[in-house]
Image (cartoon, rainbow over the protein chains, first blue to last red):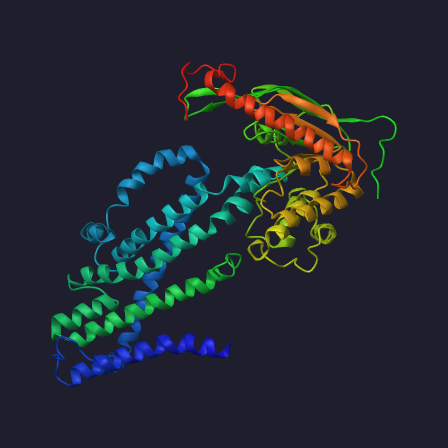
Length: 259
Length: 285
């Protein structure tokens, strides 16, 4: 048992460490120009440099806030609308064609328009993230409620459930695994659309956050190591966020065999 | 432990009156009769088993009594009142048990009690009684996915009995169990109900099971289901499968059903009476 736990943790850790060694080695041995692929060492030194005046921390905070805000907003809208659609068929019939159309538009396509509408800066980025997070949650929530096994409904009716309690004690609970799927997908999208939106806004010369940091230091000083730093941080943030979601939902979903 | 004889007058519990049910079969583009002119009277405390060849409509009939389906003709009365929708006075135990996977054993059993508005302490108390009654004591905090097939069926039973229904409906509840577990569950069911004498209707494919359990046996014909037989089984309980009368009864119904199936399959060549509307030339399978 103990041995399993150790291997469980050691394996991924070992592979990451190996990757870092190879990466560092490849550059240190001059097989690749450090300009094009900054080694871990320069990523770390860039991090130290940029945190000396609190700049790095501030950008991380701003970006994280945006991503989480947009995610929360998008997910909430998605869940509310998804639940409503799954419960009221007429509503679903009305909204579904609109969804089918809008979900095809990737969130990044909205960037120019978003900047026009919301101006330069945080609001536009927030809009993009919200938009991107919305659709997977909405569609999965809707499907989750729509496809609740009718057997559960029959069992509940037989046991005396009324419409309201059928909704939040049966439909909602039964739909949770699908809702979770939507939330899981969306959190990844939130962090991905974050950087794209920030980079796009940053090209205008104004902005904040990690994307802006990356763009600024590249434009001004051609700092590829800062580019890589930004990528590493974003990957880490996304990873932590997904882990956080999984832990948070664990309590609600412990009745599933896979948990 | 022999069966208690009925004493005095037998109160009529359920009246199935002139039930006919049509449905639209999309694959044949015709309206079919599932059931025709079903009339059955069930007394209080009677354990009724409904058997018949596949497709005879026995599950449809049970669903009508449960209130899940409104029959196209006729009505069902419970204590004189017409049944129009499902409710805890006629709880169903499903073949696929339909347990709520997000609730523990305790939660599932308490569900119906919660719907009745019972306070928390009382719910826990009542649920505990039934959990122990079906032999799931100690498993209160387990989730359905952790239970075996037999245990799931017991949970389904406990959940339904906890609301103290007027009538217990069982739709092939033991069909998914292996032969051994099935026999055990049959005895357990009798044991549990023996204390309550609850009016029950059980639908099954197994003639053996029906004769073993039933106070009243109803046999439906092949589609459209008509009542071919409706008789009381007066063998004392618990019944012995080697008892000569038991064997005779099983044989009797077995041969009736065989004849019925043959007749129905032979009849399929020009099956006019089963259909209303639709094409007059049927395609052979």
